[in-house]
Amino acid sequence: MILLKNGNVMTMAGTNYPVGDVLVENGKIRAVGVGLEAPAGVQVIDCTGKTVLPGFIDAHCHIGLSEDGTMYEGEDSNEAVNPVTPHVRAIDGINPADIAIREARLGGVTTVCVGPGNSNVYGGVMSVFKTRGNRIDDMLVKETYAIKAALGEGPKETYAPKKVMPMTRMGIAGLMREHLVKARTYLEKKEAGKTDAVDLRYEALGSVLKKEIPLVVHANRMDDIYTALRIKREFDIDLVLTQAADAYLMADAIREANVPVVLASVLCGRLSVEMANMSHRAPVVLEEAGVTYCISTDAPPVPIQFLPTSAASAVREGLDPEAALRAITITPARVLGIADRVGSLEAGKDADIVVYNGKPFHLASSIALVMMDGEIVTD
Image (cartoon, rainbow, N blue to C red; front, side):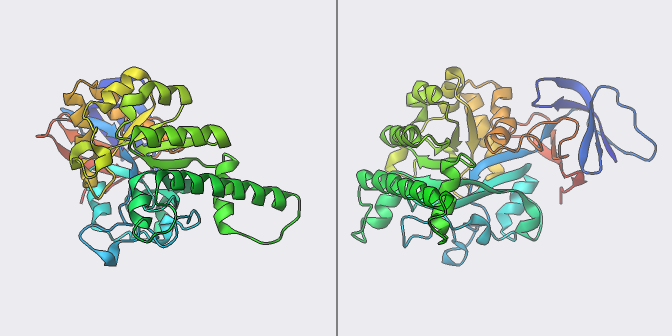
């Protein structure tokens, strides 16, 4: 049992305690409040002058799948020989020994969503896991979160040189629709008992059609985002936009569609033509428009330990600091469907906690302590 005492506790649950306490027992948060008494034998950690926060959550990255400091040896994020591979799974390629996973943990990023890249129209299954452990099966929070898909230049630049479909945006959208229709037909035949054959591709896409999981679509340009919204309407599926450089230019349409956005960090700069409109102010605009959004690193392009720095860049542009913290804690937890476990400091949730020496968005502030499932992991 551990008691974090007298810290500036920012719960991300609507109530903050400028001088508050967090009691941890058996890997869970037992209580949050003011003046909590230390039971006999409890380890008391003085957090005076420090900020106590829930562990950070990166809702879209590739750590462990695109391993840091490697080339082809550790690059497993794109099965780029067929544009339709919704059945391949990120967890089969994730290496828990990737140094980026340790750096995430030490940087206070305690939970991540990892999925395939953007080379294929349908890239595969995304998973959510904690950033400590030696075996991915033991690190999982959610084995199957979503199917990753992509519009725009990713599939185009992968398949145009091969002179195979999709070579255009029309082709990408056409394949996306074609295989959703085939998945729907597959489900109908299966439910009617007209087939015993198992097609893993359509089992995966069938989960999207049944709204068991969302389709996460990589789309940067406005036209691609509108295509994603169009396909959402046509097939009545749950959609999450990721990367989304132009999202702030069409915030009203995204809000009206009730689609969450996982913004890529702007710290990487404009890595492609489609990111020409990238702006540090994007979170400010989405916040004002009432769009649900997260801030992510898309690591490795931006090292994952810079997730809070990515949020801080929006604070500099006028975003309320607490809104910025929500974008890397409770909001990604809700978007990922894991808010019952992580994302805020509340009794009953996993004791994933970050303690800062000072304010989290000050570059001079350092992390004093990281706790995961009630254990101090700052080493």
